[in-house]
Length: 241
Image (cartoon, rainbow, N blue to C red; front, side, top):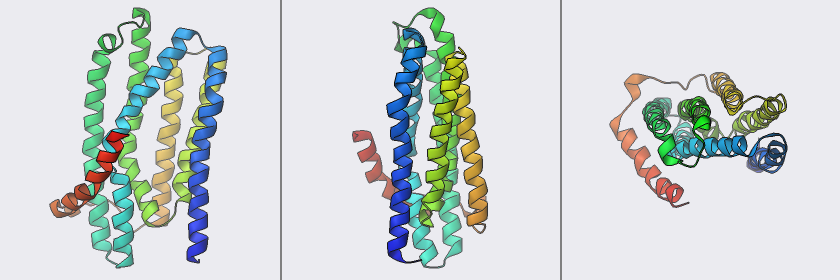
């Protein structure tokens, strides 16, 4: 496969992944507004927004995994490749636990953060935020698998899994709204689709890169320092945005 074809294929995959997000962002809100009460729609938007803050805890590790795995593969150094993956995966597991703890803190003080929300809506928002937030937290370790695909220049796999998951979750949310279910069921459908996409990504990684996997013995401090050094600039840019 020529470099030009790889470039075109990966660029097309990125456009498709971004296009799926754009389609959902454009078409989903008008449908929800027509079939949800003002309070329920506001609660759903706040749940999505609060849960999405967890994405900032990634610190760019997915990008770092892709970069360093690509470098190790070019050197044909599979031990270093697995050390990078194992160290990043361990760090992402810690981040997942941290995000759940922060999520529980937010849930406990939700009525303080949003004092205008009617009291009767708070329990629904808390459950929806818990379900959606936990699914996003589990996505942190899964992002290491996406990093492997990027390092292998297989952008098509995360594009299909992530883009497809966004479309499927949007369809599921619309169905839930049309049958009159609450924001908790909307969050549950979204979470289940996300978990399914993680499973597909894992299966794809085992098929595409069977030699890359987690090994606790390969979690190394020098690798961690190198990854964090690379991620420091990405973290500044992310939080600035």
